[in-house]
Image 1 (spheres, rainbow, N blue to C red):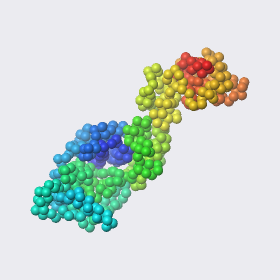
Image 2: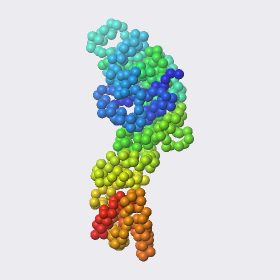
Image 3: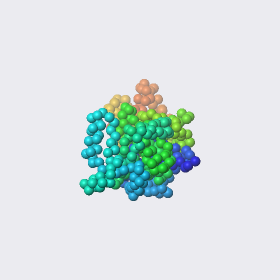
Image 4: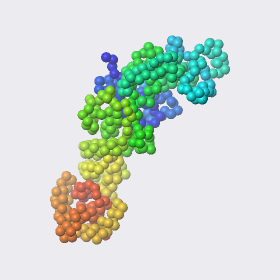
Length: 486
């Protein structure tokens, strides 16, 4: 059996899109399941739109997802160069080979002539295919065109009345009528290759065995098969993935939210969760357990079970899954991941252990790491910012002032254990404090604690109150209670 070799070939004309990341993932899973090779190729023939910044983003995003390539522009390999712009000297040789074998020819049509053909086909309400008017030019006619200053493109000669059939790894058997394709350009008049030609030559030279890509490429496949056959090369197996659609079933775009991997990371999605979620766009685990790490996904992956239908990108499900990963992550590791989102604060006022305790206290409701920026506000600075209505309802109210006055009377007896994982005594003392107001005033325990929590955090709900007080320390808690009492 030949070695399984797959590739992902993004164009550096933008940041790595989540759809391209899904394609990369399925290629990676397919190869790693059988010990094959995963190749990265940068298709930067569109020099005007290509940008080194986007190339770096592709590298960074794939690495962040754990999709490390075996061969590529930065790591090398036996079949380079792996950057298309460095391969321009290769394509003309193959184009000439096709001309010599009678599979291609020079086309001298001007753009105006081609546009006129297209307009006529529209007027006559028939599918537009190139007429082939340059198929059988004489050498004299070619010489005259050259003398007129025309530079030829090179077209592939599509055979007439041919049924082009292939078995798609995802969609099953597909077939195409060659009469609806028409002779297509493989080399432009400026000497650059078209996509369909360059990709065949690159995949052929890099010995790519399986091509897994989006279904928007299906119409390219019959043209590419014809080129492979004309060159006498082995045709790879193709697999076309359904599209990723937004919840409203339109094309996924920025108006729906983040679409690039780096945007998701910037918003605070864990790359492990993002990868897990993307794997479920068109594929389902055999055991029904959706939360799996990359190793387990590889072991369970079966490309023939990928759905041929489009997938819906459900942001709510991604948020849920990301929250599950946050809840399960080791606290020291999670703290390191969260630290970039605390850059607006002076975190040096806390020890590493205290910062980890802050994360432990506040992580429960998080769906993305960026939410931690707002979740920890009251741990930093001397002043408290009150949520809307909190000051009037819970600080300045009659109950609020009663609670705060009693708190200041009892405060010096409260036990602020220096052990951040302790606090049992303080828990008991606050329970007694709540019981006092229930028995004496008839207030519910939560009503009593609203004033304490509001004075210390500016909020009426949130993390464990004892844990917050232990992290802040006795002096800061006392100062906030005193300030709220007025």
